[in-house]
Image (cartoon, rainbow, N blue to C red; front, top):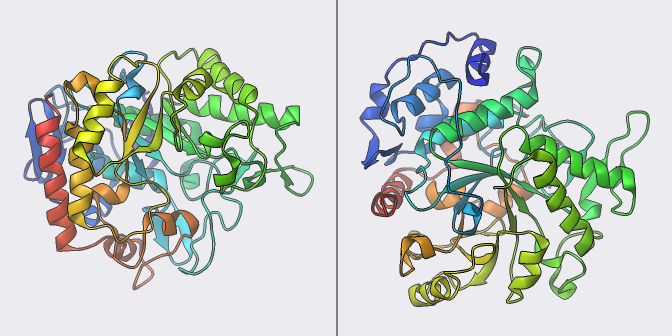
Amino acid sequence: MNKVNKLLLALNENTTLTLDNWTIERQFVTGMRKWIANILPFELLKRSLKESIESLDTLSQDGIFYDKFPDNILTPDYGDNWGVIANYIEINNRAIAEMTGNNCRNGLLSTIKLLPAIPPSAKSWANCIILSQIFPNIYGDGYNKSTTEENSIYGIKLNSGYSQNIINFDIAKKISPFEQFQAFNDLAHFHGLKTGFRTVISADQIKVVQPDGSDITFDWNNSEHFNLFLNSHIELINTGFEAIFIDSAKHIGGYDMGNYTGVGALPSYEQMQYIIHEIRSRSGKTHLSFVGEKSSGDFARYENLGLSTGTGFIDPNDFHTVRDKAIDHKYSRNYSPGVEVSNDNDSGGRSYEERLHRIHNSLFAYEYPSDKLASFMQMEDLFPLRYDTSTHHLMMSNPSYSADGTKESHWENLFTKEDGREYNKKVAELFVHALNL
């Protein structure tokens, strides 16, 4: 049985799918590519998981509606070096999880519900979803806290499975966490998306859980810790993820440490080379994309490390600067720098007009579509957050914005209202023009 059907049965749903008229009324179409826009995230998040799967089925990229979810789902194929020109869209799956009382659960299911509103990949390049959280966070995993209490997504635990914020452990006996990730990846691939996840490499931001003792701080020079990190990431790649966003990657091997803002030691250059090589080799996947947080002009350093692209090197507001860099790197098929619409450190306050301008430059600033540079967006660049929070605040804390203790109220109040709907429509109009290039 495929994992999507297994997930439906675990949630006490049947596996027969029905065409979703709600989706048809809200779909944007360009060629064979379809997605929902001119919406508020709440409208998607409050739907049942089966309705979300029926929505994805209705938006099928091959134009066929399937009464049963297909068994064999292939990832969109853009060759081994797809990551060099992809658009990466990070979704904070913890922030959109089910906040009920002080509990935080089922962020992966919420992300599935949001998938119909993510533009699928284009003719010439892929769109790739990056999940913010996979592993348990060190403090308060499975719970929300006040807006002023730290509950950082940048501090993780290894050797302790996956986050209570993300996985549905109520159904884990029917469908394992590994299989839940497989179901997510199949659904994303079915919608024409690549998938990946964020990881951290700063030693003091990683704890190793010991079954018979207290958690201990990760040590890159401890072979057991090193192999635990490596094997944990290979396991995730084996569920269908194809990209890893590496926090603080610019500083690997002690590079530019004067601007390092992480906590603790980083892997040596040779250690990270080995990790990236071994993830590719042991997973048997030659097409994986490794994305580094921050880049500099020393492109050979990142290419030789095994990265595909990096963030934060190019001015995203200047169309001609982006276009000139795209032309400069048109033959760089192993590594090229990318364009940021926004990043995980975004503290808010950027106008809708500037966000739209940056998205425009990311999607259109090149000579030919095959020359495009990679770009980096956050959930807020598609679905604006409420005005008193920001991407970075939601990475550092995990508040519920529910007015009555229900998950529906949190979803409704996490994002802006009608101005956010209009902005979402304008983003869709940009992608309509880009996806057939």
